[in-house]
Length: 127
Image 1 (cartoon, rainbow, N blue to C red):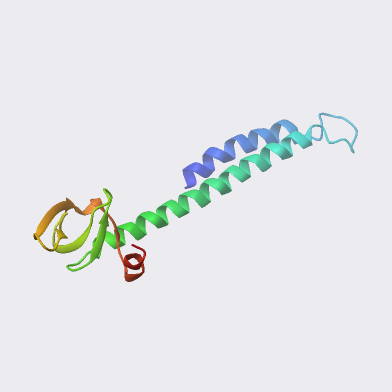
Image 2 (image 1 turned 90 degrees about the horizontal axis):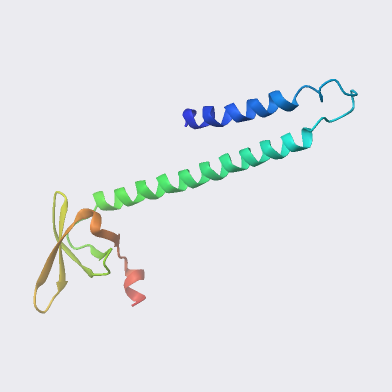
């Protein structure tokens, strides 16, 4: 994060150096191009804030998904990224065995990352 801030501070300092001298010897009350400088600084700050909000949300989602995958357990009702719904029969390291058909006892093996979400009773009622 400090690298990003250092990268953004460089252009801001350059803008301040160009327009920060009071207009290059003009009258004391003149702005000397300060309006353009203000727009650039505001634009850069808005972009930084937007980027920080986006990155925070993304990292929060990654942590939440990783916690869900780490907590997979037998008898969890799951949805895979391919749209297959089933019940977890076994979790072995990076693989998950899912029973998809009760009558024929059909079981499929997926990588742990292929599980999109653990379904709750609320999700089951929406069928």
